[in-house]
Image: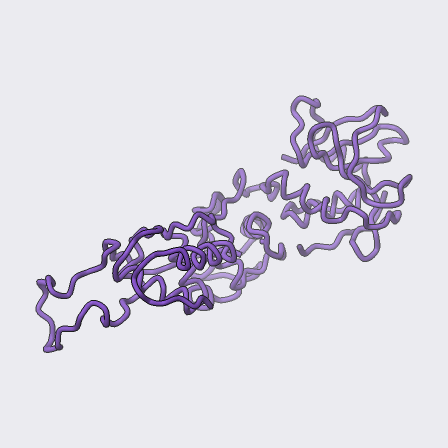
Amino acid sequence: MGGVAAIGAVSATAALTGTASATAQGPSPATSGTVRSAAPAVAPSVAPAAPRSTYSGVKLRLGARGDAVRHLQRELNGHGASLAVDGVFGSRTLGAVKDLQSSARIAVDGVVGPHTWNALAGSSSSSSQPTLRAGDRGSAVRTLQSQLNDSGASLSVDGVFGSRTVHAVRALQSAAGISVDAVVGPKTWNAVYSDVRISGGSGSGASVSGQAIINQARSQIGVRYQWGGESPSTGFDCSGLVHYAYNQAGIDLPRKTAKGYVFGGKIISQSQAEPGDLVAFTGNDYGHMGIYVGNGKIIDASGSRQQVVERSIWSAPHVFVTYR
């Protein structure tokens, strides 16, 4: 099976600067012990909005009250909500928080902690970062590498956007569910500063979870079979689908035949196989393969069915192959 594959196929949150924290009730102007320039005292209900950093350490949930909740409500309104800024964390505020968490691809639990505060500040934080690509150098690349390491990568923080950094970026993009193109723009910066984790490190580029590979293959079910095909627009043959799914998931595999993929990887026993590994049928000189889903099933570009399908492994002799 021959051909050459297309690449392209994750949004989360950006950083929130500042470390000051407050209680959920917020500071009380009446009890402040700091002498300030002559400014009239104001009632808490009309106090000006506090800067973002003031509440970055506050955790809020349903039932909370106070200035921190008012600040939260203002921020949510800035993201499209329509809430009364009354300082009461009620059901409408809870719904707005969950909507924000869902759109930011963080845990939708209705609890406002660091990741949710980061999501509220996301647009301004990500837009301050430059777009980065392979070959770039400098302090922004060092910042990227450091944040990728916090997400589970294992990179030298050397300020050089080389192949290992490319692999780590692509793995993060796949895990975050955004376009896997190794270009670090606003969505990728948001993911970099979020709680998205890179599975298993990123040194080899084969660091994406097996589920990410399966998801990419599964998204092509029903696409027509085409010998040598390597993309949704041309159709797929069996090795073309493998190449497409792995690369879309952030694993940089060169285009090979089915036999080439067998002997380019590591042949393992069925008991060692995990979802995302390959199943290669040995007949016709290793002439066919699919992506292992688990539970005795594969996704493959089937010549007999003339499309990409998910089906049970049949009784023909076969081996399992991994690139983990």
